[in-house]
Length: 397
Image (tube, rainbow, N blue to C red):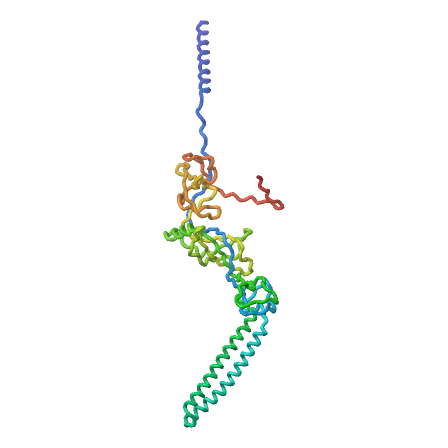
């Protein structure tokens, strides 16, 4: 009896030991690599819509009109009649040339005219009397013809004298040099006492009309061809009537918008660009010729443009552009795209994307093509505003 109990106890102990051993073996069995959860990314959904395609072009300011003031008579400058740098109107006197000789010439011409008129009056009386006498056969026809010819000769002398008077008055008036156009006048290149000659090469001063003023910008012929092709295909319409924004050298926007006027029909063979002229109102004369500005010009207007954020676009060493797109089953794919103009913080997409595509904005460095991701809509972060009384920290190198 005791032997049977001992045998059962031994068997039970062996069974328990085997169970514990098997359990330990199961726990120590090697496990496979743990499955990583899908990478979290944010995305934006592409949506087409109307968009004005603009181009930022460098330009220089050019005066609307420029006139060099030159003398038309010879003489000594007696006085300057304007303030340098001021605004002058067309016809306003600028210089007075010594006109004593021209006054004397005018007086002589007028005296000669009076003498010719007196002679013509006597010849007219003689011719009239001769015409009556020849009818009565009191004088010969030849004598009458001579009287009529004398009268005609006297009238010709009157006309010649009148022409001389007119010419002398022209020279007398030109002794007072006036402004040919309205505008801002520059510095004077001569002073009182200087000798000037008619038709001289050096200008006395220069007048520039600054309101309005021109902005001459250069644009590549490649952009011109692309815009014309898009308009011809119906993808976009002309944006020439859209006001042009002018950005000043300090980065601020000029208060007045410009308008495109003309484009050069000649492409510079050395640069492959052509010139476009923009007219801009300048009532306060803030814009001056020669200043450098930037013009934001509307090149075309598209009805269904796709814009992709610049931060979502990657470039390869060859200059190609691509984005990560979330496809079916939240799987990632690389999509090559073609972009052209910059629109704010976005690129204008020419090909490669369509409305409804989900483009990854954040988390590109954590994904690979074909990987499954956990997508969430991208939320624009508000810029951090510095507290009152503080200044932003300088960037560290």
